[in-house]
Length: 266
Image 1 (tube, rainbow, N blue to C red):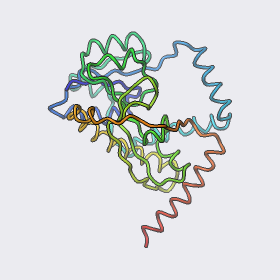
Image 2 (image 1 turned 60 degrees about the vertical axis):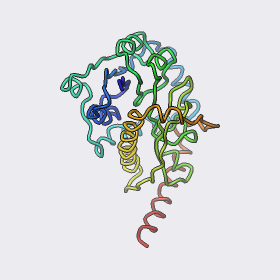
Image 3 (image 1 turned 90 degrees about the vertical axis):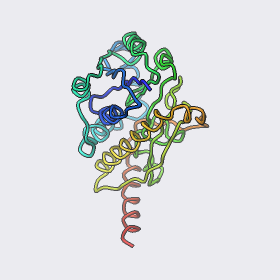
């Protein structure tokens, strides 16, 4: 099975899953495409940012910027990854850069790769002109349970809803973010660490580990999973929490951590 990986991070999930996929004799990585995320339409970008600030508030936006490390750099403390570009160079995998996810460059690279399946790891919206190029379509790894947590960052919204579990979903990509048919999903217990930041980073690492193993299984048995894919029902869409929501997340984190620790000590 020939695959092409599209990612927006050199050290994200692709840097963990990529080497695992490479080791599989039944899987060939034809190309890894890195989205540089260049600002092509600055006006549209800033209007979108301003609209989001109005929605979640200035302090919510600033807090969201602060939390980015919790889902990025902090995760690397618990997850061994490689520099994706160096890994490709060392293993003769074609590594290419594209200015934006849905640019003509991306489309040309996907056509050149001639892959069976496209894999999205850590990207935003992917247009039909990209996800329809591969002969068997394109799939995405989402770090939460669908359809209940569409576009949601891992862990935090589960805590908001007073839930002590998280998980991941591997689904087909369609024209709506995180709403394609579900190929596989798995719930995982939230492992509570000393702080909210450390809890998020640790569990994101656990999600990446488990999702990467499942991704390999799905690609190797794609026909089976594709034929049994389940359409999503009514879902719930999330974004960056505002300050009031974040306070509730912190409160539930403390309560759930205490409850889980009490159960473990019985």
